[in-house]
Image 1: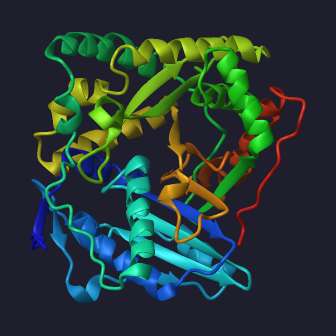
Image 2 (image 1 turned 180 degrees about the vertical axis):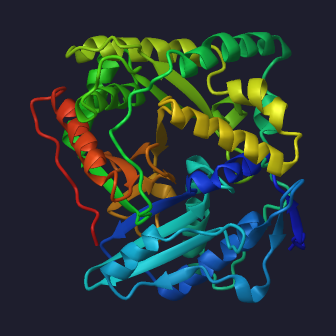
Amino acid sequence: MQEIPKHFRAQYTDRFVNSVRDLGEMMMHMELEFNHHLDIDRLSKALDLILDTEPVLGCRLVKRWWRPYWERLDAGSRDVLTIAEDARAYERFKGAPIDPYIGPQIKACLLRTPDRDHLLIKLAHEVADASGFKQIVGTISSTYSMLARDPGYRPEPNIYGDRSIWQVLRHVPWHAYPNILYNYYAVYTILGLFPLASIHLPVVADEDKTMEYISRSVQEDLLKKIIEYGRQRNATLNDVIVTALLHALAVASEWDHNSQLRLRLTIDLRRFIPGNNAGGICNLAGMEVINLGTDLNDDLDYTLKRVSSFMRQRKAQWIGLHDYIGFAPLIMFLPHRVMTNIVVRLVQSGKEIGNDALAVANSGIIEQKDVTFDIAPIKARILPSVDYPPHLVFTFSTYNMALNISAGSFPCSKKQIERCLDEVIVVLNKLSPEKAKYTSYAA
């Protein structure tokens, strides 16, 4: 087995996420519910092995004015698994931050009840996005299963797997750059900035940072009809959810009809890599801004047509790459502290003028094979990183034909988020005569 280096370079995408760490809780969760009990010893070993299989997970991020870097942890600093005494301890773990400067970059909590297990895996956002997270959990689950057959099993460390944005950009032909730059300045920037005000929930931030997640779920029968509704209109599930969220925000925010119907959408840039697979676990997400202006009525078909048309147009023009070609070259070579100051100031300026558009992250499908710990879980979902109010991040994922929509909340934003997600379900119900079924993930 190859010797793992003591240090790894922090990529630009690592540093960019780290630059906004003080603006929210930069962590993601995957929550799995099993109707059987896991082998705790095997689970603990599989979690320890992932720190070597993907070596950056077994590191701490070393702060530096110029360039931070990843440093491998000593053997005594690798505790990953916590066994929760009860449901309250499990929820406390869920709301607790993860410190990338201490490491490791992944933590897990297991709650055991008489007939089932709840497994929560927490990841520092600096090392990976949702797609990278699913890759990590897939490796943990396959290692767990292999250890049942071979207790001495050790996966080969992925030491040289590419974690940089270059693995995407090298597939972009040179003749596409002028068009991407034009779209960055003439379309992406204009849609994102003007007119100034973006639709938002009426949240007044306070000092209470007690965090919890708000979720709503839609089960198979309705989800199939929602997907078919979109397919008949040449629209994706992502298009339908964005449409529903825009209408829900208009109701929950008591929209003034002046602020822009503007959202920031995450785009998985692995779409531009042959095979859609990155070399290593990493952040390869881009952003897209959709802005419907102030044109909204009760006609969901009309809104969906506009959303899907916009998304098809953007997908044909290198969607999500704008920031990496238009903005990143302006800051990526600056000292990390200077880059952080610039990024934070830009975000704060947006908040001050009411132009900090809410974010929507499509975490995609959680494949059953990637979460099978001998036996597949009955439920699985991804919970998003959480920005401090008034900014909000919504995410949705699907598993086993169940759709979950979530957002992190604080006491000042909980009621508004609950109302918004309830309205999303109301809108989705309008696409079908059947009512949405709620699923509780409470332990």
